[in-house]
Length: 198
Image: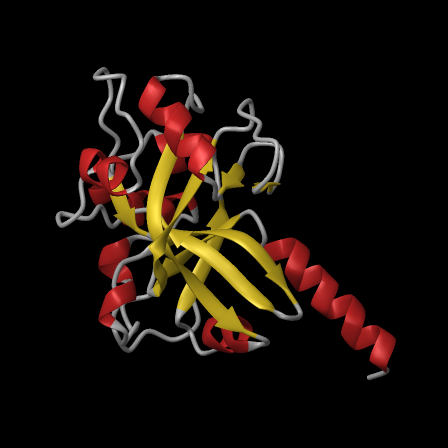
């Protein structure tokens, strides 16, 4: 295989995983990722970055977070959950949100349906009731080094599926893992810890 062929395969994989969902298989050995559904914000030759969608944190509340960040809490209409986004940089906040919201900086438009912001401005706007229509706030993120995620997928650690706004924003965290599997036509009851390739 030539160098350019390798590059084109890498680029295809990058395009394939960015904006997709990773679904943890029952064989996942890391308890932090057990039954996780992860939205992939970035994927390239240098590595990958995603946010766990279905692990709300009991330890951190939105109002506590705002207080720590010295953000005045204005709107009482909506108290978003704070999620465990992953084990990397757990003191840092990330907001996965619908695309109509635009920030001047610190925002990545992942695709037509999803953007990610990592600034205090988006938290201020959410607190004021002027933030994105749909959003998931996470502390920390999930990260993989070069080739690490591809190897985990090949080893049956993850399935991948399309990310839809309904699945990401309108499905409750406790139902997301099963709903993501169902989107692939996979029955969770048929998956076993020793399952082969799905």
